[in-house]
Structure formats: structure tokens, C-alpha cells
Image (cartoon, rainbow, N blue to C red; front, side, top):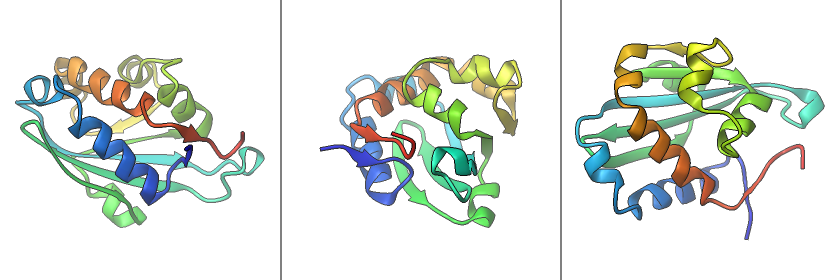
Length: 139
């Protein structure tokens, strides 16, 4: 069953995928902080409004995974934003999120050095996302 991207049910499945991954806790043992993803609106791709996603990680533990409002998203330790098409590429592993941040294809509010030092954790989270059967808005 495919889950509609950027919905709470999809976020719940994403969280379950991370929690089920045997390697995640050891890779993320030193990660501290919440991460928000802001997906910019793109009416041509059936994304009429921005999407705000909040994920809280703490030393290998996966905490809140929420579709939220702008204020909650902007209060995260790390706030990543970008166009819908870029986030879809990340979710399908067509682009590396850390490289996209370094190249300016995605924007980060937060400590990029911290993220780069923990690239294996970031990549593991994206690997887990690819395990969620996702229906994207423009498909």
C-alpha cells in the first residue's frame, strides 16, 4: 500500500522504518536535535501549499515525527528547506541530501558541519525513507 507523501500516516511509516533498522541506533548514537523539512509549494506538481515536517532524534532514539505548522518547523535544531522536486529526488535517492545542502540545492538553517560529520546517520535516515512505499503528489 502506497502512502501519500507529506501526510501524518506517511510520517508514521517513516518513523517505523527507522525504528526497525538494526544499524540506525549505533550510527545515530551521537545525534542530538530535531530536524525539520520544509517543502516549498509548487502548484504545477500538485503541492499547492508548503509542507512542514518535524522529526526529533536523540542519541539513536526516534521521537516525534509530525506534520506541523511553520512555527514548529522553524523551531527545529536543523531546518532544511527546498523545492518539492528536490525533496522528491532525495526521497528516491536520486540526489544525496548532504551534497544538495553543500551545493545550495537545499537550504539549511543550523550547523552544516555537524550534519556533514554525521553523514552516515543522514544517509541511513534516507535509506529508511526509501523503504516507505510513497505516492508523490505529482504521480
